[in-house]
Image 1: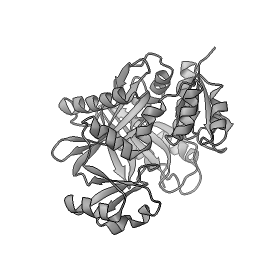
Image 2: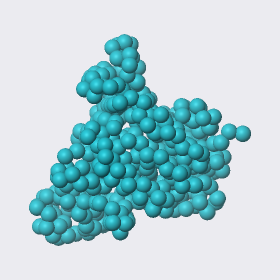
Image 3: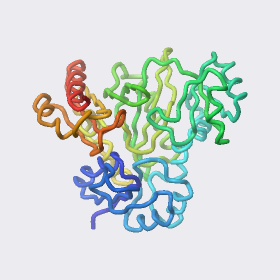
Length: 372
């Protein structure tokens, strides 16, 4: 009988697990909140992922549970574990991707490189931090933020007053002077085997990942080794299973600082679907079922992934296929089945080849067919 993986969340990450599951002979079942979500093709249950009864009933029919997002409450995760469900990653690891304050505390205790930070609960706390950090800093809500949401640049405590109205502590960090942003992805299975992909460079626009270059230019040697050591330490020490993405700043004085963690397939790993021997979605499924991991080397000298953000002003992505596919026959297109909306990730394209300038051009040209 085929193994079955249950995915909580019906977004594009769950959708992109489906082809990999088919190739491996794995059955995918998805718990989604509503109809019409990106992974609709694999949705078997509709319900609230915050409801223990709904999630437990869904989990009874699968061999392992994993996630399209990191918002499942700890109480629900622990109820699954207590019921004997294989939860990958488990609640004790996922906690540090759910709460940025706890993540900063744990990484700091491990001696890993992070921006200077503090827990703040009042406007006065913010002003005190700003006084010691050049008058500007980054303020974050500990939970729920992504793609630039829940992040604010502040230059006075008054800039944070509305966020304190909820009564929760916030995370404040130094405004890092960085030359570029990087990401290191690693997969780990419960029995301990790890596999790392090459470190990649990410290009952000308006707080959203717009492009990824794999491998990151000028990263061979010490930089790649340090990034790999950081990701390996986090995966092993926190007991992460499945894919872990470690987002990093390369500072202007060539240090690496940890920005964010994601314990699931991640936008910065989408290039691997077409550009690596084993893509992140296949690897994630292997890992959560504790199957041997695949090789992670690059298929081409360079791979470039460009997100399609917003989509066409009229019609659908599919309306543009004829022109796009004819103009860029070497580029791979991925449609998330989502309605266009300003700033929304509705798909991505990946190009590969030996000349980086040419690869970047082809990827950007292909994405442009879908963005106006």
